[in-house]
Image (cartoon, rainbow, N blue to C red; front, side, top):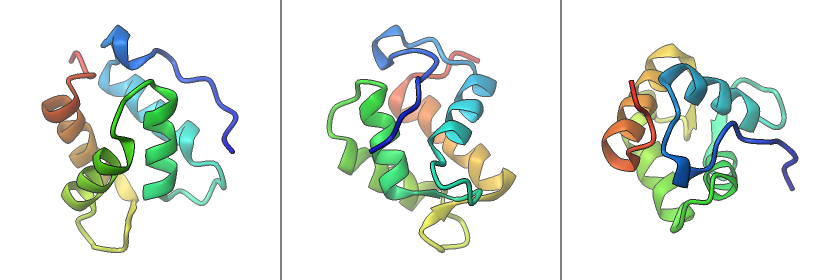
Length: 93
C-alpha cells in the first residue's frame, strides 16, 4: 500500500514536466531510485487514471531503455515524461 499525496489528479490535467518528475520520485516507495511497474501502476491509480496495469506496462516498455524492468536514470525519466505527454496528456509543458 502506498501513502503519498500526488500533486494533482489526472482529471486536472495540469502537471508540468518538473511536477511529473517530482511525482515519480514520490512513487518510489522503497527509495531505491528505480520505478517498478507496480510503483508506476499504483501511482497512476492514485492520480485517478483507469486501466493502470495496461498503462504502466506500455509506459515501461516504451521508456525502459536498458530493459531492466524499471525506470531509472535521467534518460529513461525523460522518455517517460515524453510518453506521458503524448499518451496520457497530463504534462502541460
